[in-house]
Image (cartoon, rainbow, N blue to C red; front, side, top):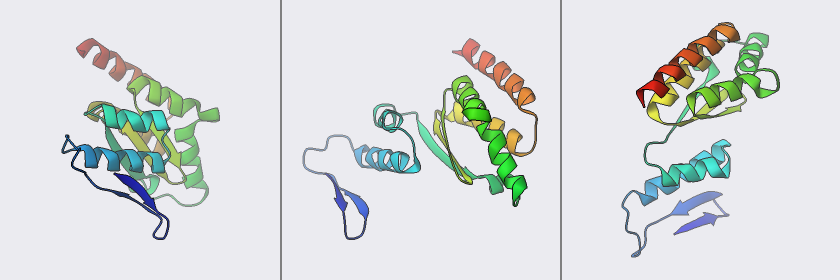
Length: 147
């Protein structure tokens, strides 16, 4: 059972006698948190259907302490012009990325999350986007050969 408590402004979930899967409550919580973090509904539903999808969040300042224009520039490098860099990372690593102010949220399988996180961290640390693209391309090629 899922309901929204308007007084406390929170989503409440509990199992019922019809619940078969014991992990259903956790999957429901993951779905709600993914949707609230800004992922599209289709991506959040994928968390319900697939077992090996994970959510990961971190702040840009966790990677490198930046302030003012330097912080804005780092976030801009991750997003890219018209979101081009973000889409390139998403497509190469088969992940979903949401950039919300100083927070970056990732959704994907464990290995793909690691590759995407490394690419994003390299961009935050100041690596040129071309170098990050080439590294991702080689890692994506290796991953496609493995599976």
